Amino acid sequence: MNRRHNPPIPAARPGSGFGTRLLIAQTIVILGGAAGAAGVALLVAPQLFHTHVQHAGLDPASPEAGHVEEAFTSSIIVAFSVALLSSVLLALAVSIVLARRVQRSIAAVVTSTAHIADGNYEVRVPASRLGREFASLTGSVNDLAERLDTVEEIRRHMLSDLAHELRTPITTINAHIDAVEDGIRTPGVHTYTVIRSATGRLHRLATDLDSVSRAGERQLHIEPQPVSVAALAASAIREAQPGYDESGIVLTAGPAATDIVDADPARIGQTLANLLGNARRHTPAGGTVTVSSRRRDRHWVDITVEDTGDGIAADHLPHIFDRFYRTDTSRNRDTGGSGIGLTIARALAEAHRGTLSATSPGLGRGSRFTLTLPLSRSVPARRRADRLSAGRKHSVGHEPAHKVD
Image 1 (cartoon, helix red, strand yellow):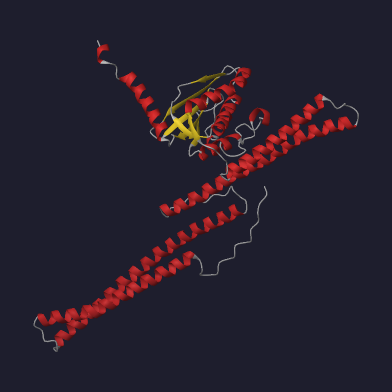
Image 2: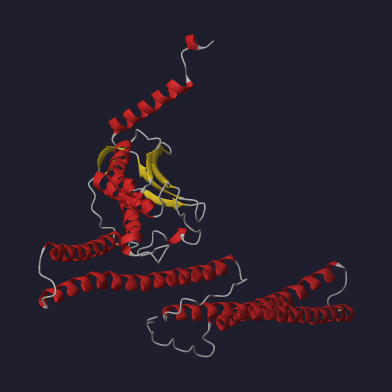
């Protein structure tokens, strides 16, 4: 793993830590409050007592009144001093414990983020019991480390895949050129076909890399127009049918929505072709892939590609749309894809203000990919679709009265 070594974090000066500053601030507040309470008590209590002595009928100048007031003042000083001292010590003890816990938690976060910045993504911040905010902070740092660890693993696989994808066609081209130069092979149709196939593979790889780069930068160009959802699904099925026939997989059309969406037919066709190609690769001969569509609500319509194939493990589901991620690394590019197609498919869905999601009951139980698109903003198109939908509901749920027995 290549790690980026950052400059060391400067050591904090003694007394400059957050925990120390928090303790000093709390100590100042406690001592200030105690001093204020003592000052108020010593100024107010004797005067109030002197007033009550006068109301009791004692002569303020008499020795008895002076003795009583002196005894009251002394008892107030002693009692208040003991109470303040106990309160201050208890408050300081609690503040010290709290400040140390806060300082340890902050130090753990700082240490962990420093390791993460240095490329060690396996580090985790221990759970904190200082409240919801600290728990959220530690959880966010741990999530960041986990995501970066996943990205780093994908990057390593990506570099390995790229090296393999480049090496194979280049080796093929060099081998045939060497054979021609050494007189082992005579240039002909077969040689040119092999070389053209290898260069085509390199061209596809370069195109995929450019597409995934554009997808990451949200620069995919689309030209939306009102188009029927049923037409999009039918076109995708028609184009994918020959490949399914060769693989011995049944490709069927399920219920189709009659709604209109604002979409780029070529781009949505690319997305559906990718989903159907992915389903074909992961469905064994004799399996079934179904394409259907339905209106979700007043604003959205779903196009679903569901297969009876390999399925997707739960730990793979959150990552299958990540670039260069493949659930089965043993597959090569020709049989298992490069791990770019689903990334581009989701980017195209998002470029249409839609989403692309995947679900699976588990391995060996098939999977379902759902492309969600917003209904057309065109008022006439929307009205036509609504009338068609209302007509179907009427014919099913509201039979004429004379037909009722």
